[in-house]
Length: 579
Image (cartoon, rainbow, N blue to C red; front, side, top):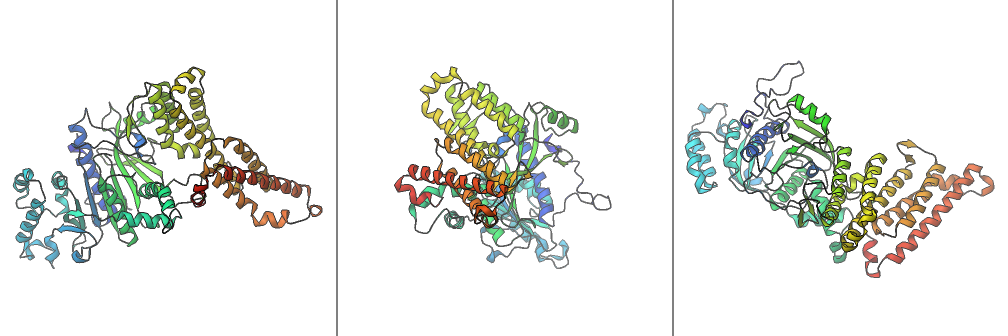
């Protein structure tokens, strides 16, 4: 079936309703991206899936949700590659990376016809020699037999070249030729990353590093590293994906029209970073993978079946493209570690290439709650990575369930903090039924360290939910509605009073955020000018109420400062003041 993939793709319909003469427009990045999507899905995802159908490691839907998990397995039999495309002709000496150049005959052809180029055969031979020299010895003869007199740089031959490009260890390059069409312009490219400089520059920019401060650097380095990589669609990963991400970052800063694409043998996901007119701060990020739809998502399964979107109907496998939105670092946001979020998901039809966003495959809140329920019952049979170094394969024992819970809560922490009250109450109900069940006291006592680890993560989420409400209240918003200053102060003091008793499980970052939010409210110029700075005799009953709750907020913030001072170790005071 994979050989028929996208065989009925007709290309985008023009304004007058007619289809183009060719389905692919390979004269710009956007058109090239569509062509590459289909070629890479067909040859690098579908072909291996049908070759290793019984053992192919499908991507779980949660793996496409930020924050991304570290992949501990590398699937050597599966393909992997990296590539860069530049929407301009190459300037070989001026390029900022190393690669072996290939020439299109049309580059030397003023008339635009092959016959006008006297060096046509020589150029083809030179390209073949260059390509062959980077292939493994075992593949060279087969390559020459197949492409012995072919212009391998032509975009029409790119799909046939894919099996051989996958055997060349480094990146391949595409650029525009003289006729403004993309062609294969280079192989064996090394994409420079300069990770150390990028990491330190970014850390200083967001206020997490300070020149010469080793303690602050050590304390915040992992956070900055993780945030920087997630901005570009990855966890802390292998060199191939790291260099691709940071090279894309460099091209974006230079103002290039580009596309960088990478497929890892461990993540089985095609990740694309590219320039877009509406992307002002970072390159756009998209991921494509073969994903198994949850069996609990029955309405979606029915519609996917009716539309013919399944690659493998029995296993509920679809081609899923996920598009992400980046977030600038905000130290005042309780979810300050949120670098990326999903803003669109598309299921791609395997034959027609039609992409539809009507299906919710990876962000279904109800399926997340059902999955959590299966975990605590010990009925979940999937796998998850625990603390970056251990794969938990099932939930048969309490130890495995607690480890699974910790990893699951860490993975979905930001979503639980930000999702609806209805979803959150479902999560709380499931977690409390397991963590507070009397029948589990004895096994949890034997696993006290692990239990406390999970409880600490749960407590963090509970407190962070309250801070998320405080963030909205600071803007005088509650559940999407505008509220008065008095309502804001009443609700804020009530929440902070509850929070004061919850910080037995102390998290300095959350306390610091609560103090920051409270200070901004106390320094509100309108409040101070119209209510606080006036004498009581000059105020209405409404104004006096505002002044009363303002005073309570002052007292609560003083109590929070005292708690923070008592909990802060002397040697960590300087660091905590900066995070």
